[in-house]
Image 1 (cartoon, one colour):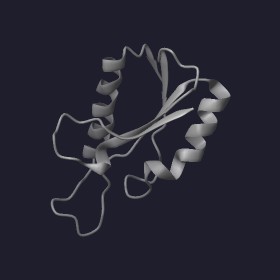
Image 2: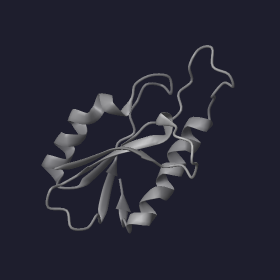
Image 3: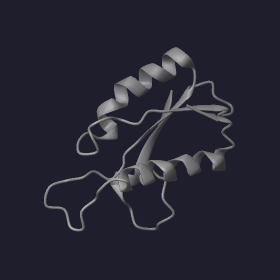
Image 4: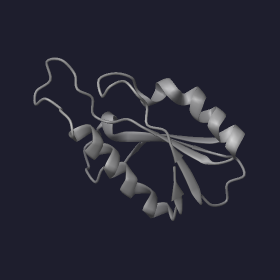
Length: 108
């Protein structure tokens, strides 16, 4: 298995760890025809993509498919400017544009 960490999915030169994803690839993947995208829970307020690394690795091993686990901006106390819904969902939609660069045919 190959793991690529902290891949930005926004077209911005500034690094934003809340808008990066980790990509888990099966060892025998010559092409990525199908991608499983696991969007972690946490009510838009908690958790991080790294909290789900073990699950992503198990998904790759058991399915043979590539798995992406993104972060997204969280609503945090004392945040300026505040991040509110639907900005979280817009982050995930930006991630949805990313796989087109890799000729991924199916996203689940």
